[in-house]
Image 1: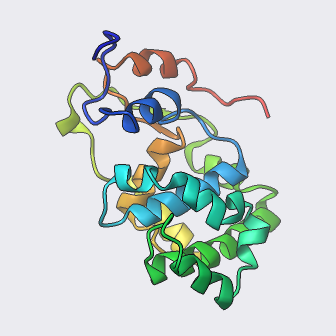
Image 2: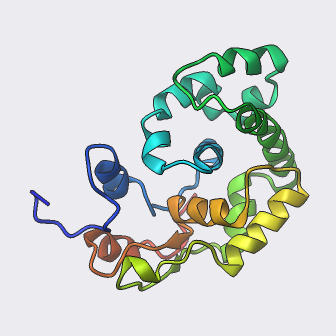
Length: 197
């Protein structure tokens, strides 16, 4: 790279590089951010992350900045309006699932106090740090992702299969999968403890 920093191999270009450097793998403790990542990772199914990332601003506009209470109240007319919006991926089932997932998300908040408390409980409150040396070693899913997926499905979520859940866990910093050669690996390894809330 022009700045001389070693990065994970997928982090190339004006969209992926800043996402990798500033967000990917940083522990998330905001419920709004958790919902955003779940919706965006679900939207990615069958597509590239770059395709979704380029539409992120459109998703924020269309989905009320991922406010779970507002999104959970979207009715059929709002869904139809989103389906006409070129700023998002216009896939009916994915858009409908964003609304029903927000409804399930709100139910978790009501029972657990916050979605953050619920989801971080899956990893005992601290990130799981892997020490992969090559991109080929990084798995597409894991036992943890399968457990999270099964529990979310049981609670009414859709588009949360094990592969999507693993990508979400990586993005939200619950699983740290920066390669050992990546400059962010060293920086984020120090975050492998609960953040104060």
